[in-house]
Image (cartoon, rainbow, N blue to C red; front, side, top):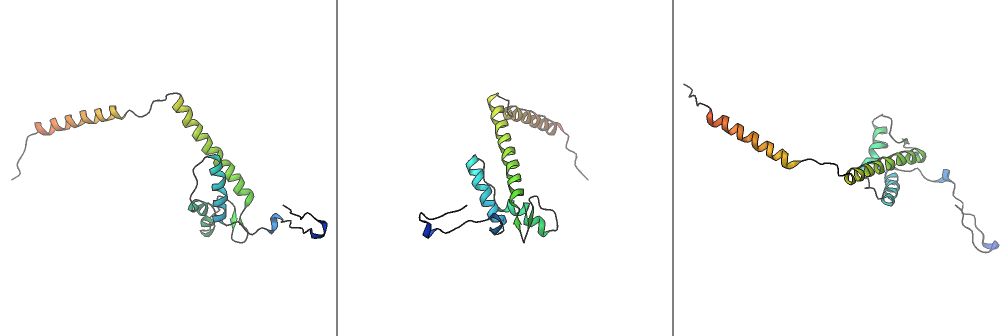
Length: 137
């Protein structure tokens, strides 16, 4: 990205190379991810999720889900790849839910379940009432 003033005498090169950017922290990655998720209409993630996927695993000696080192921070390419998969997964799930609702897919029949539980309770009550009481000596 480069900005220059309008006159040649005042021209100042303000080009910023990607390599010059400071390391991306898990917090910063979480903010970037949530900006994309908001734009896509997807529920935002908590910062702990990004810490768990990056530095937490690294600190435990495990391979992070999203490439991370304390020196280099969160790898931007790995974050982008993860984010693309995450958004696609959430969009697919949302579409499947919409398709199921549109098809009139049957949900759970709670009324039938309650009726069955009521019948089971009646049977248990009959067994208890019909049982003989034996007194212990």
